[in-house]
Image (tube, rainbow, N blue to C red; front, side, top):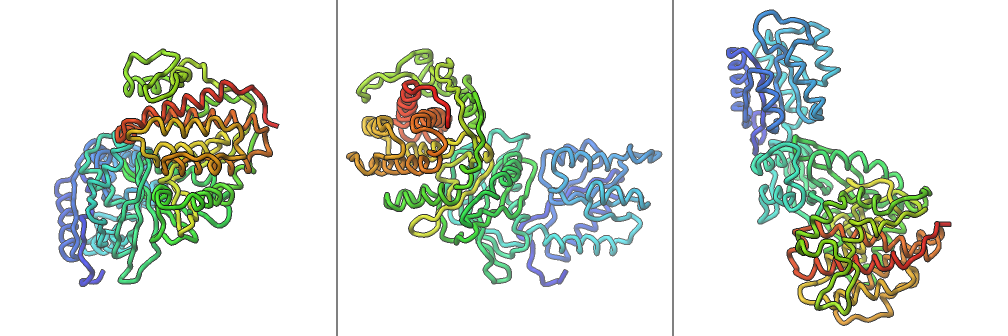
Length: 561
């Protein structure tokens, strides 16, 4: 490495695992001297035992681990008794082997030992303690150069007034409390910083601009990258809990081959840590510097542009999904949506009682001073089993989380690209359509003081007996935001009818779609941060679910053709 290379801007975190005090002091001394010579920062943690090393690997993020294979005195024993191999096996079992760069430094350099460490346990290099300090330094320096110092020389900045703490707390608004192991916000900040650096380690300057997200416990940012003054292609990153990011990586493959019209969201690479993970996406054919979330686009776009975006999304981007359908018999839509949305009857009842009070549990009707009539209680109907819909229907590939934060829009007329495939997979055909309609109604309308207006919106949609005809252009609502939401929901339904109408009768499609709306609407009772902002929102959600339930119960059982 050249002596005039730019200095580290963040400390490389290294775990040194060695039972001999003198050997451990030598290794730390070698690392410290190398860091000083190369304008690097090393944050070195020491462990002398298997238990201490394992606790450190579980609880902290490390970029590198330097591992001695034998961590006990006396006879070395068989290879199976060497604690260093136990640690490498632990990394495999915890799913961290590929995320921690392992350097084996040991007194044993026999071919079999080196082969096991390098091939079976994927250690990056195998060094002998018998080597000179200069040879060890050269090997470590070469490894760091190959790894681009894990991005520690990168100038990584955030859009003002963002901080790493705020980036982490964006997850707190969703599922941050469900981390797989205890972690402080401070440690999560460090982990996220290092994961982004590792993901973009070939760049010299990286700038993150957070984007509008949803309520699923993940967040999205636009990344502007330069390498020695040359502007590289911008990318989109998504970060969240490590298990969910890993799951998204797997589920992406289930739908990516069916994306039409070259609107492919290319998943480039993944970096996983102990608690968090980061995905990098490229939007093929889009300009990442100009893309914006659908929610932001919706607020400023005309109704005609919103329709064009919806048509492009479902007919072109996702059109092949609905052609790859599979018939199923006796599907319980209540169980199906509860499984895919991640709630149970018990959790739904608990959320309901939390927001509306214990006294409403078990009532058959709901009453509100701003509503013109009593409505059936949809939560009681679902939790009691009265709302169960069992039908012969069909399933197809789906995105699974089709809210406005997961649709990125490029251009003035709304060319769409999808991100966030964590919930992708085969599901009921109406799943994505109902999710987007609910997003528009519950997130893009102002609910502060006009529950009556929101009820009118839902009533017009529920009273429309045809999904394919649409009502958005022939029914006028006083409030502009409600009129726009009505038009958007109507357009979503018309596009849906054009894609799936050949597979079932209008009557069956109408009933099943309202069943999907029932479950998708009630799922919003779980979004505390969204509902607490506007007092009427929870009543809007409940009324929408009640009207959908009425449609479902008035419909007749029929099978798709």
